[in-house]
Image (tube, rainbow over all chains, first blue to last red; front, side, top):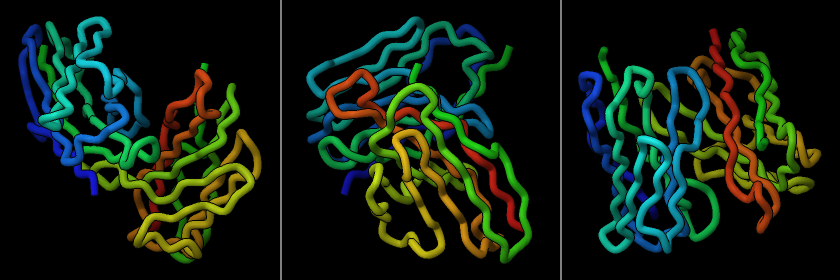
Length: 112
Length: 118
C-alpha cells in the first residue's frame, strides 16, 4: 500500500526566502508525481507533474525534483512571496495509472 | 480549458436529511470521476471512483448505501449523502479525468463543497 509523507507539516518564513518542501513515498514504482496547491477552503490547483522518467520540472519560481529510487521528491520555491501562502500537497498514483494517494500537506505561511 | 465545477460550494443541513452535490466537467468529457473527502488539517481521502455509465467503485470503509454516486453522463457526476449526520460534515472534492491518451488524461479538481450537518 502506497503511503505518502510530507515534511514539514507547517512552515513559516519571511518574504524573500528560498524554501524546500519534502515528500516521500513508500512504493517507488510510480507512474508520476504531482504537486498541488490548496488555498483555505478551496479545491486543488496542480502546480507541477513529473513523469517517472523525469528528474525535475520547473514552472516560474517553482522547481520540483524526483528521485524514484529513494522515494523522494522536493518542491523548491524561490524568493517566496506572501501570495505563496497555502497548503502544498504531493500525490502519486496509488498503483500504476490509477487513483491518487495524497500526503497530508505542508502548510506554508510567508509573512511580509 | 479543463475546468471542473461543483455545486453547491457550501451547504448546511439538518441531521437526517439528504444532500446532493454535483460535479461537472465544463469543457471536456470525463470518462472517470473521483470523489474525495477532506477533514480539517487532513489530506484528501478517496471515497469512490466512477466511470461513466458504470457503478461506482467504493474504497474500503466507505458505505455505498450512504454515499450514493451517479455518473450518468460524460460531464456530470453526483454524490448524495443520505441521512446525513454531524460526523459527515467535511469538505468534499471531486476530480475528473478525460479519455486515456488525450490532452485531458489527468485529474482536474473541482473547487470543493463544504458540508455542515447540524
